[in-house]
Image (cartoon, rainbow, N blue to C red; front, side, top):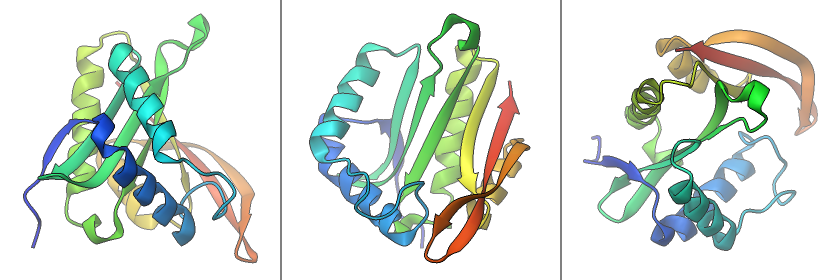
Length: 170
């Protein structure tokens, strides 16, 4: 059963839960870093949330929440050099128990809706491991396409994986 949830902007009070989700995803091998290699303690999330709140035309930090429980998040950042300002990239994290329930779809839809209102964003990009079939399926559903592939770019748990670069033109 899908929990009732809302999509809203991230709050400082979400930081500890966001850090726990990030650590869990890294431990599962879905992140782009090995477990323990890069840590994002709550204070780093707090800083990012504050920054996103002050720079709303260039950053978007959303969470899916059921009451006070954070089920997942999406963070978008526009590229900063002027030549690249027409695009930005995002990453998304979902609690393991929240996957396959449509929550990721709602987060991506909210990003696309926001980007359409920000008329200067022409392209949204992301990176995903080729073994993450569920995420790739989700992104394709929203018209993201494979723009490039870095073969055997990631080595984790004694095997190589491709890093897929995906994009969506607005």
